[in-house]
Length: 118
Image (cartoon, rainbow, N blue to C red; front, side, top):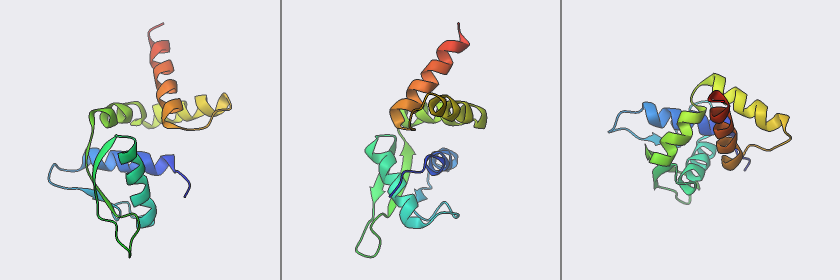
């Protein structure tokens, strides 16, 4: 399954916007197949950006519930929250011939912050 950065961003924004007693699940992002959403929630969990509950079964391979963003998740989301920053980060990485990865996104965000103060 291919990683979808727009979906990852939507999931993280949904988690942040959810009340404390609510969870974002594989079924929360309506315009995407639940298995694909669940897979991306799992990726966020693997990267230690969200805390999750795995409810996968034989019927559904990727059924995850995201409970909270971790501190690292909040910091990562801070860098990609605004459409302006997100588009600048994507343009910067792709303009240099890079691929969108967690590391390149964090590096591009850091680069943009350093340039704000220089």
